[in-house]
Amino acid sequence: MATRHFLTLKDCSPAELRDIIKRAHELKSLQRSGQPHSSAEGKVMAMIFEKSSTRTRVSFEAGMAQLGGHALFLSPNDTQLGRGEPIEDTAKVISSMVDIVMIRTFEHDRIEKFAADSSVPVINALTDGYHPCQLLADIQAYEEARGSIQGKSIAWVGDGNNMCNSYINAAAQWDFELRIACPEGFEPDAGLLAQHADRILLTRSPSEAVRGTNAVVTDTWASMGQEDEKDNRNQAFEGFQVDDELMSQAASDAVFLHCLPAYRGYEVSAGVIDNPETSIVWEEAENRLHAQKALIEFLLSQ
Image (tube, rainbow, N blue to C red; front, side, top):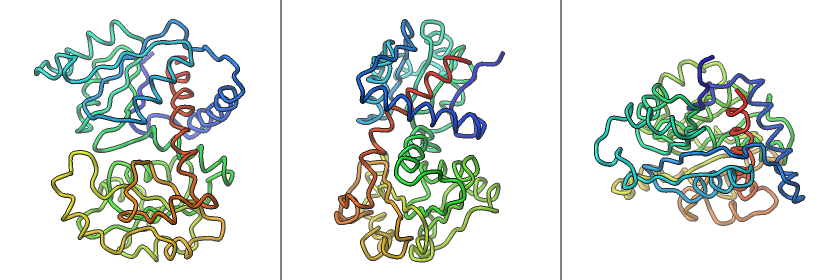
């Protein structure tokens, strides 16, 4: 049987993704009630970070500990990847010693190359192309707040980045409509847009995207590695801030999501992200822990 990986949401069927989220809800309940759930006892995860992180490292490392396993943090300075060893060679060696690998890196093809030569499951903890683990947390948070996301309308306002690409995949896998508002030149992957044209609206108007939707989602305008573009991006995204006026155009029960870190006064106003009536970003952030634990269980069971 071929080794299962989780590089994008398309690596699981819609039914498998629903099962993972269902288990995430269960694991969250177990964790909060202090009940042990050591389904990964004796298992080891290698965590390869070529991009730094807060939520990703804490959630995976804590998650493996709570499942009874162990996690090894590996930065570029800790591995031969940082000294030019071929990805394929590193994959063969590391996967011969651990049970599962998590990678946070830059170009998406790097993780694809690693997975192709890995004998154990590989999890995409973020690439420049996709961020599927965050979508698991987002879907879990939406379900907790408003029930099933199937058939709903979701607005993405901002950069057509890795999160936006993953929201396009999520729209197909969970069967919802996605409206994307971004400035010209900042569109998401053109191939994904064409593939899912039946459920995607692309517009230059945040108001058009948000009007009547059940959730509004945004992200930083300058992602990691784009720091030198910050000033130009801030100018390009003028008018794309999610503020109270924009949120008022969504459905009356709409929620706000952001994968964090957030920059108040730029992509989102403090009034929106700190509004306990509509913002679910803190549950969303915590759910990285629970959703990833469910994913780890799923992959180790295949």
